Image 1 (cartoon, rainbow, N blue to C red):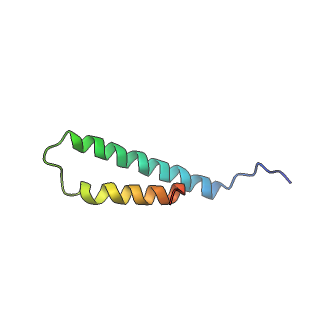
Image 2 (image 1 turned 120 degrees about the horizontal axis):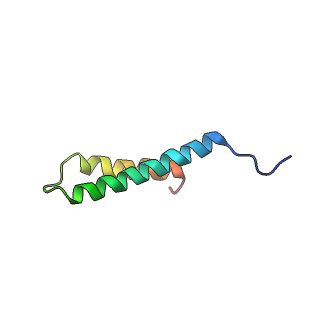
Length: 59
C-alpha cells in the first residue's frame, strides 16, 4: 500500500481553516484603518481565529 494517500476531507478542512485564519487577519488589519472599530469585529475576529485554528488542527 502507498504511504502517500491524501485524506481529501481532512485536506479540505485544513484549507478552509487556513482561509478563515487569513480572512480573520485581513479583517483585523482592515479595521485598524477604521476608527472607531465596528462592534462586529469583536465577534468575527475571535470566532474566525477559533474556527480556523480548529480546522487547521492547531487547537
